Length: 141
Image 1: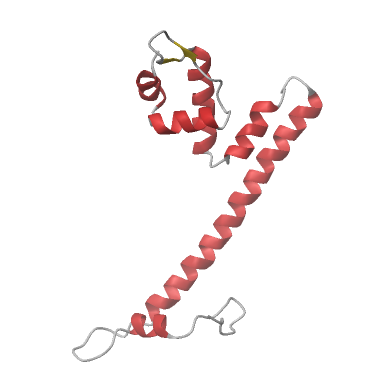
Image 2: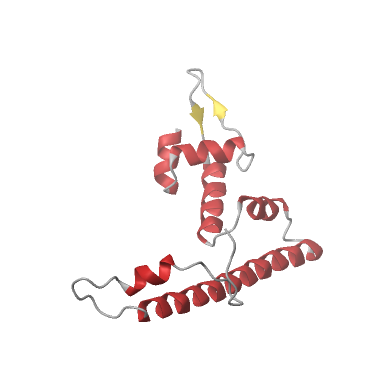
């Protein structure tokens, strides 16, 4: 199949497929006499695997690690579990960061005192103050 057909089958843009090829995540396709790339089922399978990993927010480095493991070997299977747990820890960390961000935004929203003529917006006033870090000290610029 040609690259456009592969893109349609995987839902990935042509540029992304070429990038993954350049990065060595997929094998180079065979070249036809007219110099077109010819992709096969192995490319489709590999790209579907990569796309699934990307939907789980795995980096290309992590995907490369997974692709290099032999899951039939117990020692290597343990590394796969470690990688997954690192990903889970990262997600937990981002959730905590987003939770703190949400709280800060809710606090900012409380600074609104209404919008009467001639009165500055409390949110804009708060945003105009020097930024503070989580410990409450003023951050330097």
